[in-house]
Image 1 (cartoon, rainbow, N blue to C red):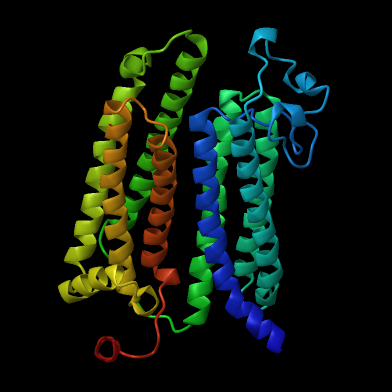
Image 2 (cartoon, rainbow, N blue to C red):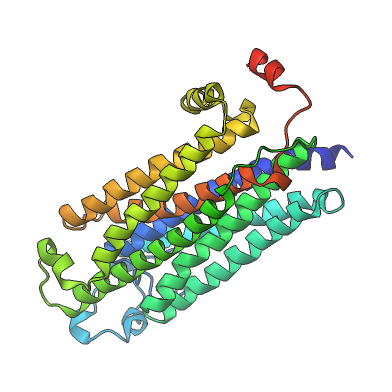
Amino acid sequence: MGLSYKLKNKTGLLFFICLMWVYLVILAGGTVRATGAGLGCPDWPLCFGQLVPPLSISDLPENWTDYLQNESSENITFNPIHTWTEYINRLIGAVLGIFTILLVYSAKSFVRTSPSIFWFALGALFSVGFNGWLGSIVVSSELKPVMVSLHMLGAFAVQGFLIGGILRHRNFNNPTPIESKKIKGLKLLIILCFLCLLVQIGLGIQIRESVDWVIKTSEQVDRTNLIQLVPWIFYVHRSFSWVIFSLALIILYKIYKNTNPTDCYRSVNKLFFVKFSKALRVNSLFKYSFLFFILVCSQMFIGGALNHLDFPIFAQPVHLLAANLLFGLLCFVWGSYDVKTIYKSPKSLDQQMAIS
C-alpha cells in the first residue's frame, strides 16, 4: 500500500522528467544534423564496432574504412568531433529509454484507478522505442532525407503521450470536477492552429532537406546566397508563419476576454515567479496560451536569424526545438480547456485567491 502511494506520487514527476528529456534529445538531434555529424558513427548501435567510440584515428580498428564503404576513397576521413557528437546524442536517447521504462513501472499503480495514465506511459515507451529504431534506419540508409524527417516527426508522438499522461495525472490528483466556461469557437481555433502548425513544420522540414541537398551536391556553397538556391517553398514557409501568429493572437485574446482580467494578470505574475503548482486551472489556460504566443514570436525571430545570418549552426537546433515546444504548449492549451479534463480543488475561487 505504501509503495503504491509513493509510486503514484512519483509518476507525475517521471512524466515531467521524460518530457524535458525529450526536448534535450531534440536539441541534441538538431545539433547533430546542423553540424553534419549524422554519420559520425556509421554503424548502429555500436560506433565503428566499439561500445565507446575512438578519440583519435589511432584508436580506430584496422578495418574502420569498411564502415564507410559507401564513401568514395578520397572522402574517407575520421572526424572525432562528429563521432562524439553523434555518440552523445545516442547516449541521451538511451537515457530517455531508461526513464520511460521507469515511468511505465511507476504508472502500473494506476492500472485500476486511472488506466489511461498507464496507457499513456506505455504509449510513450513504445513511441520512444520505435523512434530509436527509426534512428538506426537513418544511419543504415546513409541519412536518407525521408527517414531523417520521419525520425524528427516521431518526437511529436512521444510528446503527445507524455503530455496526455501529465494532464491525466494532474486531474487524478484534483478529482473534483467543475463546469468550465465554454469559449465560443475556441476549440475550433485550437484545432485549426494544430493543423497549421503541422503544415508549417512540414514546410520547414522540406526547406531543411533542400538546404542539405544543395550543400551536398554543390562543391562550393556561398551561404549568403543559400536561400536563393532553395525552392520557393521558403517564401511560403516565411509567409505562413504570420498565419500561426494570427491564430495564436486570436486564441490568446479570446481567452483573455472570457477570463477575469485579474486572473490573467495574476497568471502572468505567477508565471515569472515560478508558482505554477498553485495556479488555478483557468489561469493555466491563459498561461499556456500566453507562453504559446510568446514562443511563436520568438520562433519567427529565430527563423529570421536563420535567413539573415546565413543559417548559423547554433540557430538551427534552437529553431527545431522551438517548433517542438510550440506543439507541446498547444497540447497543454487544448488539455487545459477540454471540459472533460478540467478539475480544481473544492475551495471556492475567492478562497483560493485569498490564500495565494
